[in-house]
Length: 434
Picture 1: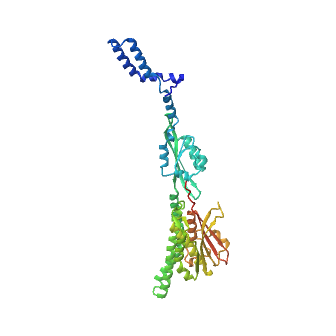
Picture 2: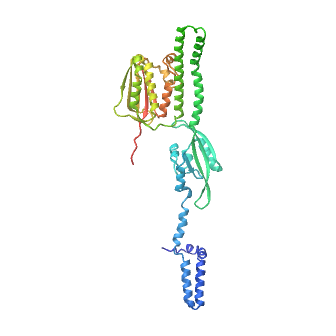
Picture 3: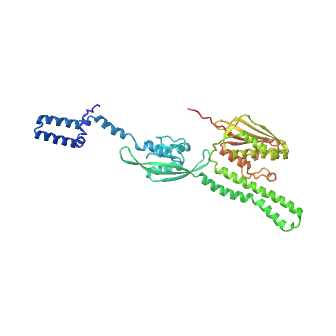
């Protein structure tokens, strides 16, 4: 092992070596003195032996290693250790550990998904551009006090998030202590959507249920009064009351379905589903309605599976609403065509997508109505919609389901030339094998 022969490194540690070797030197000196006193060893050889023992104890044969070891220890920052990284990575919520300057030290996969612009050793405020986040982060760094902020993330869908910044004391590489900033993000979207769902349900239900409830109340009063003994009137009124009760049941069912979809709008389904059997199942189920309306349903579906990431029940609801609407409101055309094709999106990045197209040959829809068709309770013809048993929520439900699947709804119509409703779904991106 090489000896470090620089003067500063050679003589600087001598006091420490002398202190650590004092017991060895004392024991050797006493033993040699006793041998000299007893005449067992001459003084000069005893002195030579003592010098050799002292040299072995004091000369820094491993001085180079002992000088390099503290330097190696000083270059290892405790907060950058693998254990700290594992703790941050194991947190269930998005979490980011920052230094006092606001640079990213560690972040977990959930944080990388929430804010893809975050990079290690870069300032977090450049990646998190929300004014609420930047303000809270600056205050936390300046005061080293906890801070909270609530903000709305609108990409790709609206999400309400709460940011909690907590100062965390950590050891430094020089043996001192410093404070890092632990940022954790909590998704408040389900709570907000529950509150909105409750308010919307009360408002919509009270508005839409008022008419059928008033009709039921009027018929009950009539049956209890003037028509009490009129069997023909009683049968007719009971039929109308049954229709109104069914309409209320459909309305409540649609409201609850819409609320459930809105509640989970920010969570994209990840189950693989084949669209072909779903369309066939819906068409088979609507055959009785097609025969009743004297409408022929033509299907144009590919033979191989068409797989997307989706929720089967919600996709059934989309196809059922679109095809049922075509059978009801386009029945005068006598034919409905249902097809499934592949095309490139005309907007955005032009990525390929699957399109479920439902075409009818009925009276069509006037252009001024097209932008509002997916609004809640919007009807082109209120009387005709209610006569057909519609609730005014079908297309709104379709739009929200497609938004949850990161898809879109296209509506094309020319008066007296039918209408085409197209549900577009993004294709699954192929995974690359490393």
